[in-house]
Image 1 (cartoon, rainbow, N blue to C red):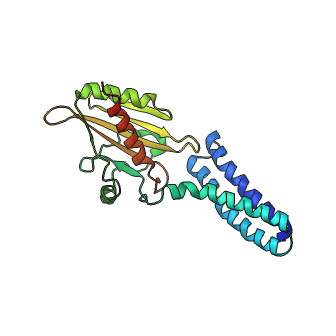
Image 2: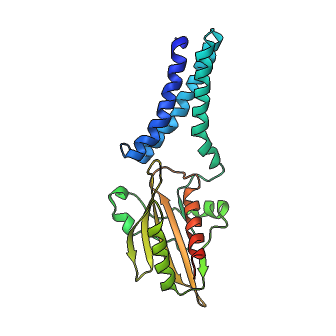
Image 3: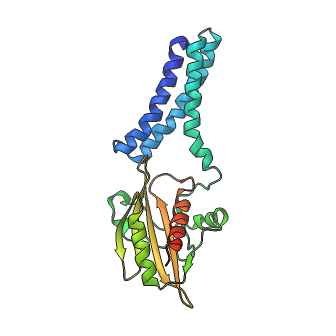
Length: 234
């Protein structure tokens, strides 16, 4: 069995490795399901490695080592992103303001969020304070209206982002961020308020629609946007 199947198993792993991102990118599968296909390649690759070892022991050296190499390659490709996000907490909803968390209003009406609780879990607050102590509200010297206009324009120009609702009166706007490969969608909301004593305070919240953990993607999104907003000040 192992003389003929070790290489085939590893080739199936490589196929899953390619199919996952491809099916997600083409929209054939929802992003989370496409990720599961991609992740399953690691398990199949591991089976391929075991089969390849048995194949080598039984004298099928060339196909055995080829199967082993493909299996190891699959494991590396799948596990590298996971290790890169290692140490990140298993939560998927991040906010800069934990006392008065920006609320999703428009996102609640989207079909993709039907039936979901978009309130902020209390247990997440302690986790955010521990793992993202530098993720705070951004304070700017400009007037709130000017900051709000610039923030909306910056979000609209961001690749992969779609601004879905703008409330100029409340100085809040919401949108959806879509990942490049798997087309995973995360909701975000930005809130602009006058700062006591002058200037402006900007807060942002970003929440994944699927999965419990986000490998730090939401925190990175918030940090990147607030840095870009501060850097674009006149």
